Length: 293
Image 1 (cartoon, rainbow, N blue to C red):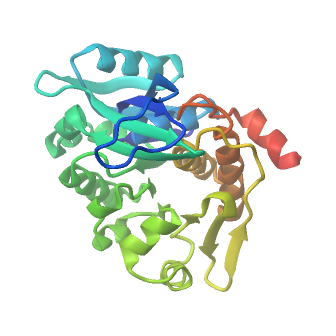
Image 2: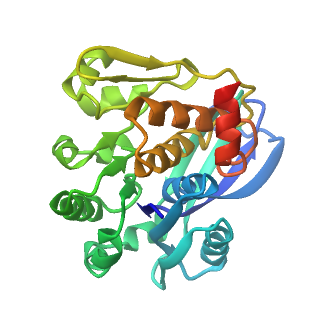
């Protein structure tokens, strides 16, 4: 079995659906409220596990109801949660999500996610060492991210990095990352270049998601554009996380890069068809059926 280790955030998503976003100082009535398991790390772990991956989660939650619920949810999805720790100092992280006009605005409160320290990573080297792929984001402490990257670099373990929130990314991290997957807006923030220039600087490494316009990367000779699959989007919240989880699954199973990106693109198109970051994440059979279509 190809082992995927996700090191990152676990949040409870607090979702408000509204017909429009309020102006400053304005109070409006929303349409509905939901809670969903989330956090980029947990979402990516579920995405890879739904596809049949052997997924291990390294994270920290609060010693509270949200933390218990999130860990139980991952376990039920088939993710190994033996290395999810509980903090007595901080509450479980949350994401406040406003859904309006088929788009979203998100505020994240890290909470216990910032209790995952480099020292804890040091104690988990034996687990990380067994990984075929490590998946990361930037919703945990920057020094923890750097500690993982350094260790993976030493052992030549490929890292798939979703560089969000982009402001915590440092360009010197990229030498330790096999695949970095910003969206177009994040790519501009990270590199300060137009899209073509950025892609050409990092061939077969920088993979930029473009929402309804698909995915692009540069293969060293030409620009590759994988077009989006048309779908009826209900909630785009988990699309990027699904893409990363699916990409990690494909890479761990030694797909060629183009095939891996196509696979992840199809998985992402399925994920937006239901409300909630994890609700629409597909199985491998569903992805293959969409690709065949």
